[in-house]
Every structure is written in structure tokens, then in C-alpha cells.
Length: 257
Ligand code: KIV
Image (cartoon, rainbow, N blue to C red; front, side, top):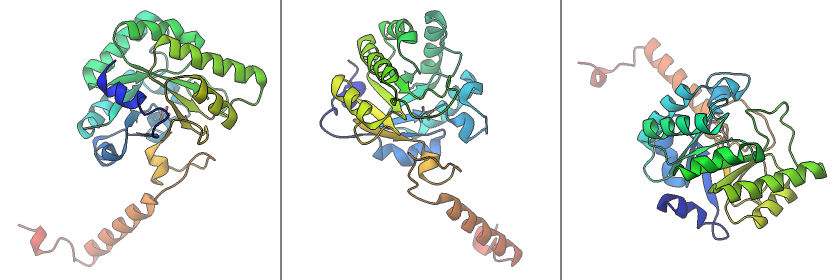
């Protein structure tokens, strides 16, 4: 197995895996030293472009943002989301995954789904492409964002899917909005790490959208914890700049030629 991937998988049952999203070089370069994985998530569609869902995110958008992120990532494993309608069959998935990897130099790609995309994932891995899985709420196909694992049939399906993904060869699985005891059961059952978002402390690692964590994105969902209020910082700095310009305190002599 690839040594960067091994670094992640060997953390299972030892220490937590830290994963955050980034859509640009500047954010990536700040968070890199504290992360194990940096994900260029297709959440950029809603966070940056105000799309109503991630379905509208294109391959080109993911590639351009990932190229920027790559410049800021020095030590973390860099994973890029394959967007909606770019992996409908094995041939399409392989062509697009190869394109993402060659243009962005990322380490792995992430795909949403279980049994339905088992063969597609297997084919990617057979072709030496590292894959991260994604189960639970699947934003690319979801009709609602209710947490998963209340119904027994749903629990069985997600557990089975996690075993299938492990069999296919993914190196870890994101569990999005999965009920706590189910996340625990999956994490205990499979030998690869689970990375939770809204899936409790029972996962091997945690992922959040950085814009949510720093308070830049307007979001109010249960699983997000705001660790700073960057909006206020930006507001205050802008206001100070405006005042300085109006009072002719900026630019001063030292800022002028
Ligand atoms: O698109 C994304 O940012 C994601 C994470 C929330 C896991 O898939």
C-alpha cells in the first residue's frame, strides 16, 4: 500500500484522524500542519457558489480548486471529491479519476455510495487509484438531509455497504450524518478508518467543512461547531480600512512611493 495512505490507515485504534476541507491554497496552507487529510469537497458548490445542491459542481471546478489547494498542501493526504455524474460507469470513472489525479496531483479521490458503485470503485483501485468511500447521507443523490440509521433496514444496508467498500479496497470511509451506535458498529466491524461528519465521536476521525468551523459560512446544523468568528474579523478589518481611507490615515508615507 502507498506509504501516505498507510500513514492514515495505521492510525486506526491508535489516534484520531483529522480531516478538513479546503477549496484554495491560502486556507490549505494554514490547516495543513494540523490535518492528516485535506479534502477538496464538492461542498464548494453550496459554500462558494450558492448552488442549491452539489449536483451542479463540474469536474473542471473541482480540478481548478484542487490545483490551488495543491499549492498549499505539504504534508497532509490530499483527497478530491469526484463530482456528480462523473462516475456513472467504470470507464467514465477511470477516465475522470485519471484526469483529476494528473491535473491536480492529489493522492486520492472520494466517491459517494455503496453497493451500486462497488464495481466502479474496484476498477479504480485495480488501476492504482486510491479511493475514499462515503456512506450515510449522500449529498449528490440525497432528497433530504435527515440522519441515517433510524430504521433497521437502513442500518443493515449501511453496514453491508461499509463491508463492501472495505472489500473493494477503499482506504477509509466518510460517514455523513449516521446515528451514533451505527457509526460505532461500523467502526468496530471494518478494519479501515471511518471519518465522521455528524456521525458521533465513535468514528476513527472527524471531518468538517473549514468555512463552517471558522464561521465564514452561514450554516446552522447540529453537527457543526464554530471555533472562530472569522466573519467578525473580516468585518472589523474592513471597517478599520474604510475609516483610515476616509480620514486619510491610509495610505501613510510608508505605504507610498
Ligand atoms: O463535500 C464535502 O465537503 C464532503 C465532506 C463534508 C465530507 O464530502
